[in-house]
Amino acid sequence: MDYSVQIQEAAERLLFWALEEEHVKLVEDATKIYLKGSESDKDMQGFNDWFIHDYRTQDGKSLVKLYLETETVTDEEKDVFKSIETSVYSAFERIGVQDKMLVKDIFTKLDYVFDEEFGNASVMLMRIYKIGSKHIVTEPPEHMPDQYKPVLIKGMLEKYNEYCRLFMPMEMSDFIKKYSQVLYRFLNVIDNTATEHALDEDEYVVYQSLYVVKDLKEIYKRFKEAKHMELALDDEAGSVFKLKNNQTQEVISEIVLADDKVEIECVSSDLLEDAKAYVERILDDIGAHLRDEIVNIDDLIG
Image 1 (tube, rainbow, N blue to C red):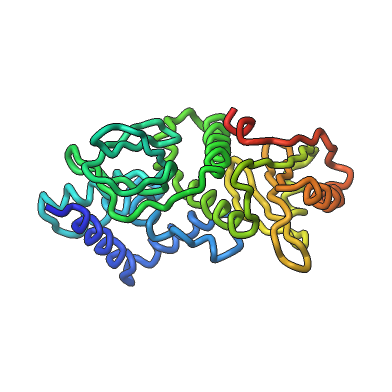
Image 2 (cartoon, rainbow, N blue to C red; image 1 turned 120 degrees about the vertical axis):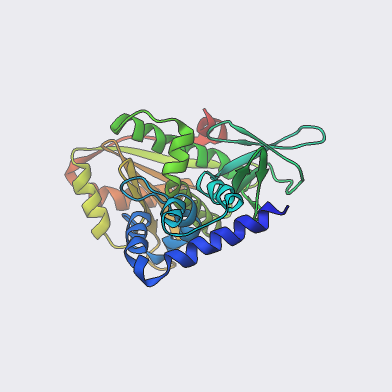
């Protein structure tokens, strides 16, 4: 039995059902959640996948649950739809085990075993389904360069810890499922950064500068209004802006606003100095420089 085909067909049924005219409000609400804090339609990348699998209404209903409330399906089809509802999208590492394909979620540390081989990269981005005792992947994994692994881990853990501090403790596995759009946003930022800056294959170094501010909301407002600033990520835990060169439109730095601090991140010391000069004009008298530092892969992992 080819569960992969059945899962893909069921996912298409869900999407077409949701796009019917009577469900337009559902799609509008989902779009608002996915684009919260964004100013660019480019951030819709990954929306359909998230919408089908991970979107939940205000009362916690999945797209699968809404569909099954109005449509009749067989018991076998129910198992397939359940696999969609409970699927996991994350970043995984391949673990070397003889005669098996074993991957580990780099965030939750959960292991998944597969019957067949489907990739050799050490870090893979993919969605995993489970039917019975079988784990299934319907699309080829997206391979992520190893040098981005510590950046992704650092970013996601910061978001997770901030959520737990501000709201309530939550298992990492639940956070990854409930707020997978955060992962999609980070991946979009990483993809864009990979295009804009080619990283050295032997060493990854980030040049950082940290500021403390008196009024983070005011700084956020100033950043939104500033020329050459683009909002890349925005949620309760913090915001990420990109500072672009006013002539080439290349990204000079990424700037994180969180916990009454502003952190500038650049790939060279020269870019950091340019970014600091620009940011300090925005901060004016409500921000103070704390320190500069150079962070390598070992620092990020630690």
